[in-house]
Length: 60
Image (cartoon, rainbow, N blue to C red):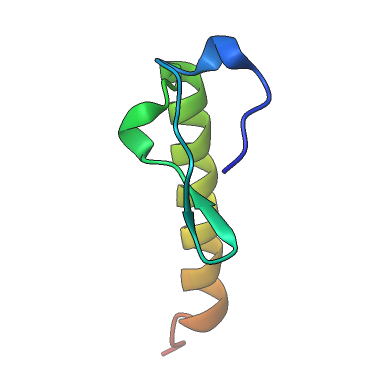
């Protein structure tokens, strides 16, 4: 995950190199409640769509 805005980080983050990927712990990033709710809503909508698409209701 890459965040360009330093005001959104709770403290300076040290990136730990693991192969070719930089790892950042979730606890190191401050996320606003509105952003968290937006992501949660988006994930719920995707999950609902996947359930409807892959598990269609059987017609009786």
